[in-house]
Image (cartoon, rainbow, N blue to C red; front, top):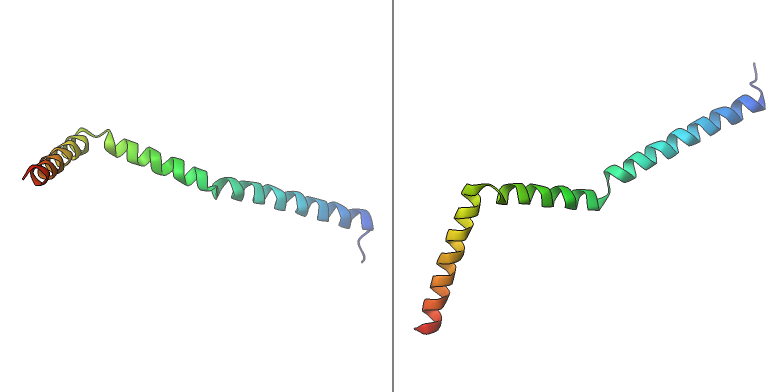
Length: 73
């Protein structure tokens, strides 16, 4: 039994709408800015941890002392 042309066109339009919706969702999920923002948030969360913050301050102070000793020797 052959389907009428209107039913076929409705099916095509529904498939087209579903594909457009899927592509929209994929473009949001695969947006590079989204990954950058998530990375920034992760780094900021780690840096706000007191253990990491004080360790980085200590390393920075040590590097500064070593550089100053090399310059003035």
